[in-house]
Image (tube, rainbow over all chains, first blue to last red; front, side, top):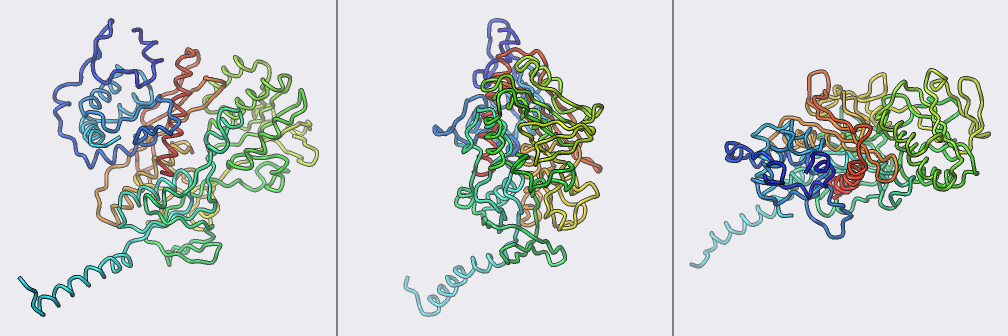
Amino acid sequence: MTPRILIALPLTLLPLVAVANGEGVEPAAPDALLALAGDAEYGAFLAQECAVCHRPTTDPAGATTEAIPVIAGRPAADLVQALFAYRAGHRANPVMQTIARSLDDEMIAALAVHFAAQTP
Amino acid sequence: MTLNRRAFLATATAASAMLAAPMVRAQARPRVVVIGGGSGGGTAARYIAKDSQGAVDVILIEGTRRYYTCYFSNLYLGGFWDFDALGHDYGRMITDDGVNVVHDWAVGVDRAAKTVALAGGATISYDRLVLAPGIDFKDGAVPGWDVTAAAKMPHAYKAGSQTQLLKAQVQAMRPGGVFAMVAPPNPYRCPPGPYERISMVAHLLKANNPTAKILLVDPKETFSKQALFEDGWARHYPGMVERIGPEFGGAAVEVRPDTMEVVIDGTAQTVDVCNVIPAQQAGRIAHLAGITNEAGWAPVSAFDMRSRQDENIFVLGDSSAQGDMPKSAFSANSQAKVAANVIRGELTGSRVFPARYANTCWSLIATDDGVKVGANYEPTEEKIASTDSFISQVGEDAELRRATFLESIDWYNGIVEDIWG
């Protein structure tokens, strides 16, 4: 998979966990980051920023194109991996890269614990 | 165990105290009044009400019963979005989140008494006031134009009937006619908006009136996403768009609505449609509240969007002077969440977290040809300062441009749900 094709894929098709894809493996988030206990209340505040794009539920009546996935209810480890990969530039979307670069490890852990507790 | 008389009385007293308690609390509930039910005010009202779970009395003052977003109204002009899908009402904010929506116009703020006067005659007291009135046009900004000319030369920069009028005018243009736009000087709502509009009008004309011309009269040396738009116009609409910048009189323009003339640097030209987007300032209530600066905007602290003139007033979105963030719905929504967190903390003791701001602006140039620009921001003593940014690149492949367009649709559906529930 070339970087160009990776860029063109809708976000929902991008793996949320590190996988081999024939030409390489997305580096996994460090164990220390994955093990960090998130502050759920801080995560709820930070997640307000995400809510401008990421809808809280999958509404069958909604006109979503699924270019921006529903992230509520995703496993915390998947969310940590996604934000780690965007922050490091392993995933291509510049909106998510720019936002992820503004997040430290504590913020990523807080967001992950918040979204994992949501019901989509 | 049976209740003796004393125990019964004690129980009854406790019960009546419990019954009375909600009323007492209701009277003592701190009140936030929000003026303006758009992207800043709507977000603030909804988030304060939702997150305080009834502990704060939130009253939203909004004149219209159905709010039409300026964002995506260009896509309606181009035929990519339904007009009805631009409109949003307040029912869910009321029933799901407990916002008290009052459909009236705020006509005065008494900062000493902490009250807001409504056009309908009521006076409402507040503990904190959120002003999010959006933009108004500066009188005399384009000589020959005022709101009485808006039926002939629409601004279409507050969405709704003006947007419908502009589209009807473009569709009724004679073959080979001229569409003119008088673009605004900085700062103004939605920096890429006029240029996305040029793109969408060109798209409409290319299909229905391919010999028509577009005349863009612009007082600015440069504009948002300029390289992306100019590349797109050359690829999709070659020879159709002519831009007259300030070096050729773009800043010295006058209009004559009765004769449909645009006068550029003293030379009159007759056009078929003229979209006048005048210079802008904060909505009038911000001026009436006495919190605006000489430029006509309301300066705020970058740490919480609090007015620099009044500690009990917060100003959100287009009407605020905050620093580097563009005047966009995304920005207003981002600012509203920071202010809502601070206001709720001050009134209920909830946790207050450091301010964070972000913005992304998507624009559509042609079918499946979307571009975007965005940034992160941090507060400083002086202003909200940009810390990191990105922008689409000229030469991106069609798949990426299509993905960017689809992303913008999801963003629209996301933000309107975030604001109006």
